[in-house]
Length: 337
Image (tube, rainbow, N blue to C red; front, top):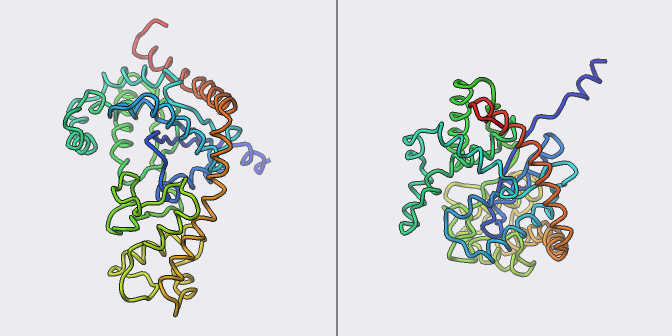
């Protein structure tokens, strides 16, 4: 009986969102998206394309629409399964924006003014420091709290956003009673921090002005191998991890994340071999990993009707969960529904 009780226990819920801001990089895949696929087996997962967040920066409507479709297709292509997870487009679930107003009225100006990403983005987009840029951490809190998740996977650049979401939840619960689950950060068991191929002191980024610095998840095989062949290394011609060898260490980290081999195993594999052999092996292994994802993406993006069917189903599933939380919060505040 005890075994059955353990088996029948509901899974913990985890939530993650990604903005439709262009094709993710190899760093995004190895550092986060690859883990999303694995998490489907362990958790009850909710995944969203966070398109409402995209317009804090001016967008070209046709391009934004295309990028939303592409982001959804890519999540399917990496292996997210709509039968196992709730996968949807944020703007198709109106409770995100609606709860955001409620939470805005329970968030302090000082809290938002201390957010480092607001300061950074204000500096980069000085001609468009809009109110949405200031308040989008509240929308992010809404994204999270609507689905009552137990865990939210976070990277170093997102910790502050989860912290303010937790603070808002605790404050709201303190005033109105038990409404929101206060989620915990989830640190994946595995995950790679992938650096630029041209400047290994910087994180790999799709906004890098040097296109050889990053691998796009939809790069073709020849492009991937060519970029790895051009990757910055050093003059020692020895494949080993060391602080003074950031370029080689980065390539070893990528190779390890893709193959599952340890650093020591990789160092032995390439002992006595030059960087040419090593770079080619890394490039071919990464291409082998991304090739089927790109092929699957092309099938999904070509079938607009099927894609539309999936994201509408996902939005219906998400809204059933979101509406329950939203109505509970509204009633607690005193609204007549």
